[in-house]
Figure (tube, rainbow, N blue to C red):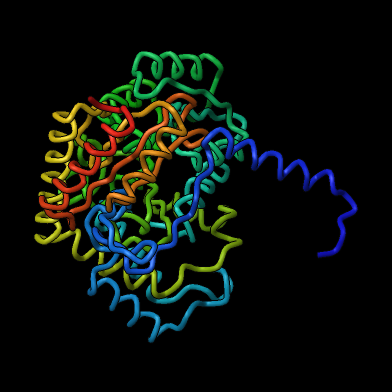
Length: 401
């Protein structure tokens, strides 16, 4: 390696990594040697997987896999282009239409990642005369998207409607032209479902638009899995989402909205204009996942998913664990200390359960946890085995009595 002209920089990087490790905040990458599913191969052994966003169990589904393979066989590995040059295939338009129809919107714009969807929605639509009122627990991608926009910024405490109203009043008093309320539909670290019915009332009162990030809701929350807004029985102006979780587990994001809004985003959204078109294989797999999620089989998968969540939540509470309340298949097991979360995850892996400890900066300091996630692919027997492993590890580490 060539000697650097600035060795102090590399020394600083090394020191920061050492400090992260000393605090128990290092997030190791464990290599998986199998297809995604309720059982995966890690370090040469099969373990139960309770930390994937694979809510409907479709990431390893053979039909979804084969649909991606067929799309790649027909359309190739990719377009080698952004959409507006020579990167728009028929399958892109088919996927845009499918997700828009599924969620009940006029049109859709696709992105290489859901992070890009949230990063690209605000700046083209809102300027210095406008206001963004954002939930304090919103995903990092929304926070970054808001930072890229010149609109005035207001923040309200998580799902606190009194604080939201105060911020809306302030935005109106400050002379905002348009106001948009931005919120996660389901908050990924906590499993809380956004109070969109109450947000809808305030939005109507203050003539505000609503943007919802439904990455952890599309496919399984609400009637037919249409998302958190459907779960709350309301309409919203913009929904961002992903094909990387319930809808196939691959990657790629989208914004569903009014047709003219989508048309403007396609002219101005920088992550769309300057990123390669979504790979055909992702489009093919996502189309098959939407077909499954929207039908009767999707209803059965959703029923199983929430039955699994209820079983796990009940048995873990009975064992004495501190769980955040809720109904979502994200069920955080609260531990507080970052090193304890890492030690607990490591012991659980030894016991045959693959989970991850979450700590700062992913969650606030002192709020470390193991975020468990249920899948429709889990069986009750696997749920019970996971609880037994948690109970054993919890007693060994002094988490429970």
